Amino acid sequence: MCGIVGYVGSSKSVEVLLGGLRRLEYRGYDSAGIAVIDDAGLMNTRKRAGKLQVLVDELDRSPLGNGGTGIGHTRWATHGGPNDANAHPHLGDDGKLALIHNGIIENFAELKAELLASHPDTVFTSETDTEVAAILVGIEYQRTGDLAEALRQVVSRLHGAFTLLAMHQDAPGVVVGARRNSPLVIGLGDGENFLGSDVAAFVEHTRRAVAVGQDQIVTIGADSVSVTDFDGIPVEVTEFEVSWDASAAEKGGWSSFMAKEISEEPEAIAKTLLGRVVDGGIKLSELDGIGDDALLAINRVVILGCGTAAYSGMLGKYAIEKWARIPVDVELSHEFRYRDPVIDGNTLVVSISQSGETMDTLMAVKYAIEAGARTLSICNTQGATIARESDAVIYTHAGPEVAVASTKAFVAQVAALYLFGLHLARVRGTLSSPEIAGLAAELQALPDQLAIVLEQHDAIKQLAGWMTDTRSVLFLGRHAGYPVALEGALKLKELAYIHAEGFAAGELKHGPIALIEAGQPVFVIVPSPRAKDSLHKKVVSNIQEIRARGARILAIAEQGDAAVLPYADVVIPIPLASTLFEPLLAVAPLQIFAMELASAKGLDVDQPRNLAKSVTVE
Ligand code: AGP
Image 1 (cartoon, rainbow, N blue to C red):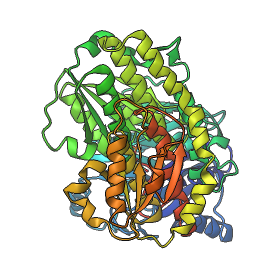
Image 2: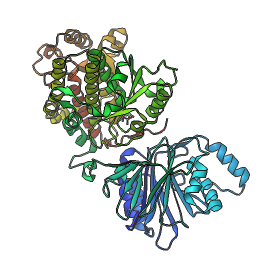
Image 3: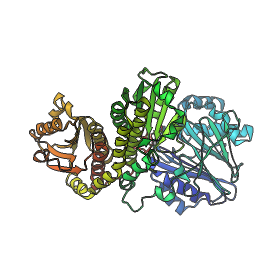
Image 4: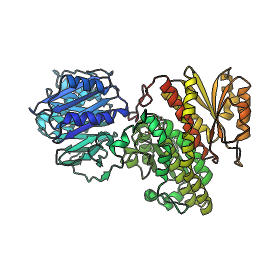
């Protein structure tokens, strides 16, 4: 998704903007551009299709004048292809106004027609919705002479999702912004202020931040920040401290952000649990927004998410149903609100989102709120839109997840969901305190167990190296192993661009076994044989069935599980863990395998093709 940076201060705005855009590259984009008001007071704009380095090289060859006011943008193409003309910023008011945009203006065609009717001499240089907004704001600025007012006049006419930043040559030292259904945060500096699509845009300069709310306008100067609603009425804002530091958003010596983030998984779980397991009990102070009485009135839980977040939600379903004895449905956010779901005030809708900005999930949460449901968000990004829309939020403290492929956020989401499941079990009296303490202890044992699994990185890398010519891989799991199979398949698809499919192992005989032919690689997540409810025997039978048909078995199995050895070509051992906790260990080898296979194929594991870290359009 698009990255946005705004700056007003005494530093050289070009350096600040490019540094911010560099930290936002992980969001996925296909062009980049900046606009600055130079020290001669003139608007200067430079924009190029391609990676940020293309723009940087251009600026090295032909520098921009360097004043203290600027805006910068990385674009993920929606309306109009990824080329120089469609790159942002776009101009209005005869090139004196520059504007950048993240989102989609759904009624831009009507606005464009109205504009051509009222101003027939208007010349469009791009196919974008954004240019229409830039021209409209330029017209309003000519009329009002006030940039914030000009923006207010225009945004009230826009439908869809947008974060807009604008600046004008005749108003040096000012950048204005507006947001609806798309992220915008303010960075508060000393003699300088920042705007960004997320805190990564300015965290190297300041960790003091303010999240701009829905339908709000922000105006920043070097020493001033003001926020109003779309009617111009001032609104209260809340400052928060960004817990990440600039180095956390760097690779820290790893070959990729993804490798770094997989290595951080034990810490991500530990930090998510920190302070929330006290004397064997669960302490979720964030749930004050949904007190025990409100939770007791809940008769159904619906978990929402997309992609990896949905798979963590499936594990949450197994745990919450088992521990709290309440029906739980897991829904893909983008399907949920279009099927006229039956939800009401007794439904708790739990949204899961690493970015907290996924439009599909945000719109589903808004639908649930309108239907009267209580809402809880599991989110990894402080102050994100979905978190702020919800009645309560349980933040996962996984730290910045920069790689597009989600890894440490997944395990942290599951840990947070398990905490909630135990909390709900206490409230509903379905588990005793000793039972809760026992399960909480198993949660707290996971970081050390996962660290043991990660020690096998090199062996898994070697396995991946042997499989670079693989064209298709299947993944099988049962019960809590099934979401792991789905997640393993997704990782391989999105990183190595290989066809991969996850199945519930019991589903094999109902069709998919027809896919099995000699040499077909199949990962199998094998449950622990020790658990009394274990499906171990059934999964070993599934392995025999596909082995008999020539499949190449790559088993992820508990250390010492001898039953698997005769049938598996490769066994990746994991420490002993009970049924619901094993998935957090079994997923890591699949993440590593996908990453190393993609690396062996020379692919970019941090920014896979066609993908964005946060999908902020529906
Ligand atoms: C995961 O590897 C993918 N990048 C994708 O499925 C992602 O999990 C999904 O888009 C949800 O993102 P979110 O957690 O930020 O809402």
